[in-house]
Length: 215
Image 1 (tube, rainbow, N blue to C red):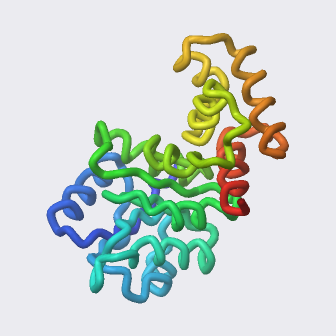
Image 2: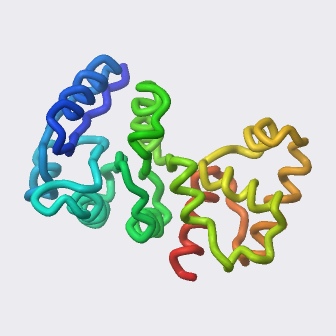
């Protein structure tokens, strides 16, 4: 029998924190820690031994970047723990850094754009399995810029969908084109960006974002 996922939640809003605790409980996850700040985050998480840490970006005392800095600290100190960032803001610098190590097991969703509660619980499951979960708006902010001037409009569309973690079949369905056409676009994208293709979706995402981090 599969053990339920163990979760640590870091969220300063008491109402949202309690709502997420209830949500994860209903999803069959086990809440092993719930905090309103990121003080001593590594010690807390090491003691709680969760599978996934879910954290806000802006936490006490300054409400600037404590949460995402805590996520980065956890990625370095406890690489076996997956991290899902829930935020109202797109912090592109930190998003690049979170995704640049190419290990997977990380997500960045925007609170105001979450369409359903199932989306959150599914994101937790995906990052635990080593996947990458990104809000499309976060992706758009990450992949924009002159460095992609060599890509055609269609290739830019495909690249954004790749960075969202979609498979070629999913991209084809979304754009209403054939899988063969998607494969040609993917090949062209990686050729133009100087990146080798990878067999797994989330590794393709991380390769693109690692390229952006180096650029």
